[in-house]
Length: 342
Image (cartoon, rainbow, N blue to C red; front, top):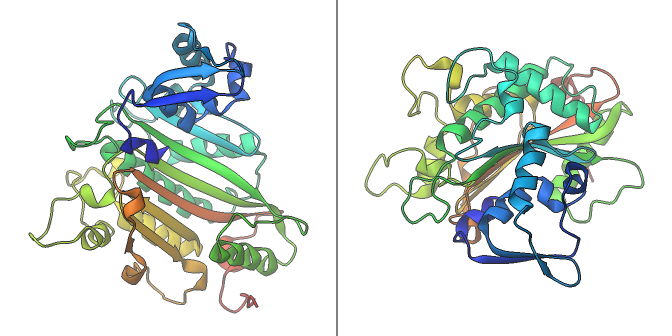
């Protein structure tokens, strides 16, 4: 979804192998039912359906809008679900407003309401115990801070960005089911080792597997949410500075809208979680389950340039295990309990 930010609107020709969906149930079974599909339709110059490549009917846009409204912007079930924010008309989808705690046109949720939203998404995927331990506060904080940051900065302000203020933002939840027969060949070696540590350290208490929560947008990237500190400041240096405490463009005292990405980093550290960020030409991975540090420290050496994602928005992901009971994440990855991986 984020990579679509690098394409000009009306540039893509989309060929769908399936028939044009008309009802909400039909949309639910296609790739058009999520954040990527909605963004794809908005970028397309022409869309065809079926083996005969029939042009999309005039009703496609209206049918998609009806499906979106019926689901309240919370789309998907089974393996994944997404809360989709469509700018400018549905920057706050109905499902998000349902948990509003105060009057605010831009962001009416606090952490308590946001936790309720995450719980409703978890139920769609069949998860029960990754939001019930004392880890829940940290996980809510991490996702809340990243989502608020995306809400405030995920709309491009650069004149060179083709999506401009017509982008799509999403909070996505995916489940990685772990069984003894499960193969994860499509995952990186580091990710496979994290899964192995989760499975072994849980001592048989792992439930469905891992929860991956992602906040994605089509904005200009985290490093562009701050003005340059010096004329020669590099994108990597500015990216790192965005995670420094008290470095924010939010008005002082505006706590309800989040306290910045430094809070997200602290929450990931407390959970001993693995995080990965793609930010418009910058890539960053940090696995706190491997660290002994008492205080959260951004691994600046892990921030690298990634030219292939330049102009492609921001994607922030965090992985946490789901347990058979309310086992705490911090207990799981306590150094004295951590088992080595060969």
